Image 1 (cartoon, one colour):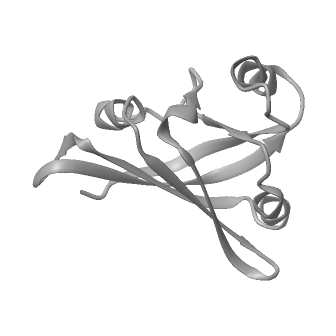
Image 2 (cartoon, rainbow, N blue to C red):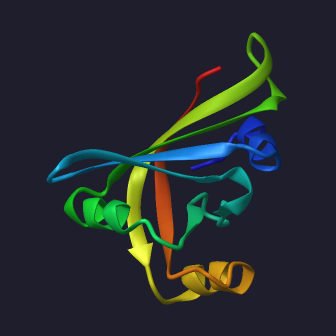
Image 3 (tube, helix red, strand yellow):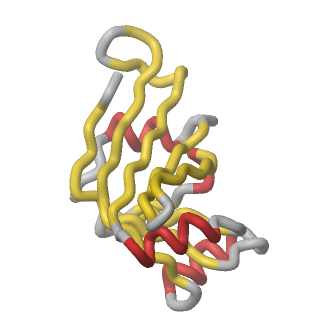
Length: 124
């Protein structure tokens, strides 16, 4: 999937990211930072996981995730600030090139949350 230019701008700014999963016990949300996300050449999002145990358990149960992120510093459709909703499939990786990419940047990483977007919607 092609990542929209506006989303690439958002990823360069400070901001919080919300990741929603659904497990046997219901929905769960966790946060990370825009600046932690790395993109692969094929359009996947790589997110370092230090804790995220509940998120990992939920992804093992149901691979679907929702991710929201944004920045007040990037112009949106109606003025300052924009945001995105990403729907996709997730997997936790504890080895391999995607894991090593993040481990080199974030020494505390225990796994990589890899998200393959199915849709990316600008919400603001």
